[in-house]
Length: 165
Image (cartoon, rainbow, N blue to C red; front, side, top):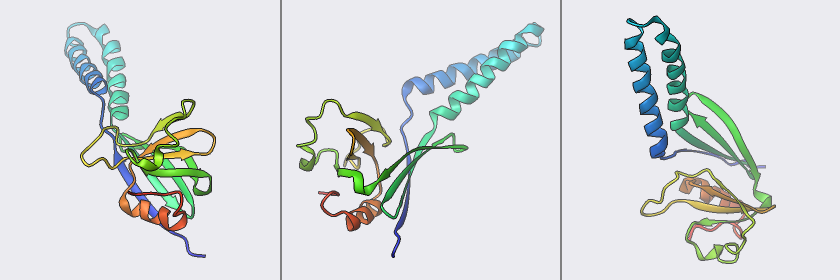
């Protein structure tokens, strides 16, 4: 039995709100650290804002790693290039369709209003748009940004479900 293994790492675009929050928390940490020399009780907010800045920094840099191995897609979330969390596992047998975002193959599936949308993509529309939509059994709509190599490997296994227009 031949197994195909493809790995793809995708950096998401940080939102403006996360960048702003990170900047404000770092500025408040520095401010209270300077004031700490005059008012010793400023140590408590300096530490609190420092911890907040650490977590804001970690959660503003999010990457998704897709692993495709033997008819299974695994999505991991990497936060701050330090912490990894398994987000989801999808079996290719239960995938209804995987196609580019603006593909005509998705026309029949676009009418589902009750589909749960899960976004594991880059988070923005680039030119050309490399994001894919995967409709999964059970009413899930998953947005991904896989590499062409990964799409080709999945298409070899399920050519009637995977499209790359």
